[in-house]
Length: 223
Image 1 (cartoon, rainbow, N blue to C red):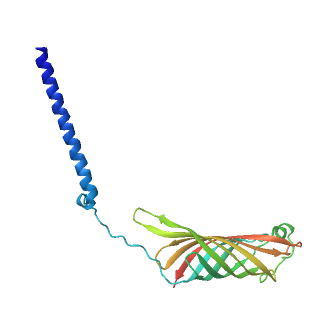
Image 2: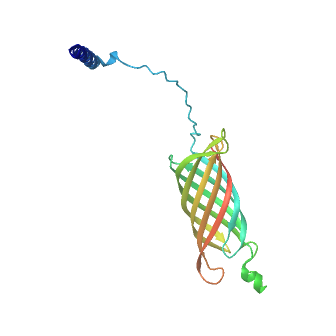
Image 3: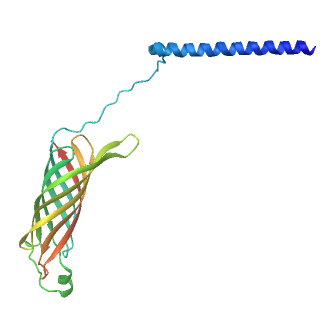
């Protein structure tokens, strides 16, 4: 009886070993066929194609704009600020901008406290600035007003110089500006700007460098 069981076990083992050899042989054969003809085996993917349309800004390089805001004239209170500019975009990143702006100085703290004669006439309190800046565009992106309302935007920095007429004098002025633009269409942009107009003055008796900060917003048109 023991001998019969051992024979059957040996027969079963031989059968399993034979099946393993056959399976291994078939695997090697399939691999060899795939190497000889790699195009014969493949999976055809069913990919849904979608059409993508890029928003294209106006290709014209000129820009004209108007801005209004508030200027803090050092020693002469805050004043409404109105400016106009004409720009030319040299490349995708660089542009030049000519600006003309007006403001009006108020009373100094000395005039208010001492109750003396005004330091400046009404005409001398009028401030006029004109100059030329070079700007650099960086940090382009998008602003999301809602899920379906998205606008292109760009942050830029400007450095330039010009002249300021104030208090009966004309002073060379250095201008630093940070500007954020939101493109409402391909030819209209909404501007937000913060600027510092730096020039020397001797109005209060001693010569000093003044920093005159401006916060403004406006519209620019490209053509």
